[in-house]
Length: 262
Image (cartoon, rainbow, N blue to C red; front, side, top):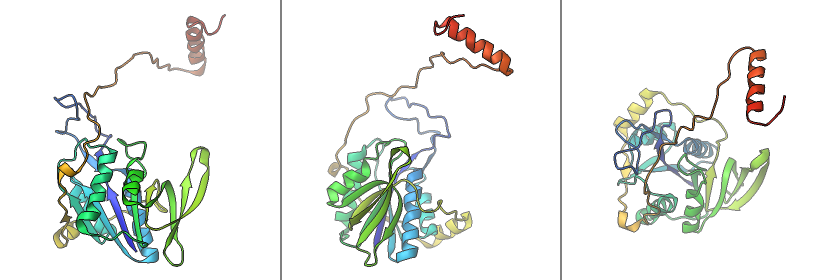
């Protein structure tokens, strides 16, 4: 079983995001990057599948700040190989990212066959539609299911049985033959924690592989003309105090707006 996990770094929204001087991108001077949360779950699910069914886990990520620490951490969690795709990939969109990841297979001559499973986070904060996984499946000629919350294999390890979430709390079980690309929403278990000491030990004993991809081979996708900070409308009014005072103020506001009459 060959399991591949494609990882993506995204801005940490805990920090305040500022627009750069070009007006088209985020100011990276104080910007902290982190692994996308659904990608963390995709990695955890890959390691769980390896523990259950055997095989190898290869993690692949585009070059970005802090990405090497994330790749070493992935190995500390149980991945067998970590690969970085060097280059300036800032601002590329989902179709370009999918083509970039697909080029990894052609450049490394990995055979995509009946024992290949590819996991990607179902979405990211800058890709809420979750388009990378279906684009990649189309390019590779593989089957696809997204918003996956559970994965198991049949006895021959030729089919994946996945649990998919739908709106309204509904879930559905699907069976699809391998190779397949799955957009993972949540792993079977919460992502495991590894001590910092273990990660540092991995850094000393393990090498991250690199695969060079020519930017000219990757479509640029959409271009950003300008970013805007959301305008403060000032129409929200915070009401504080005891219930009697709050209720009186709410009634006055509703009367003032013409919604109710005294």
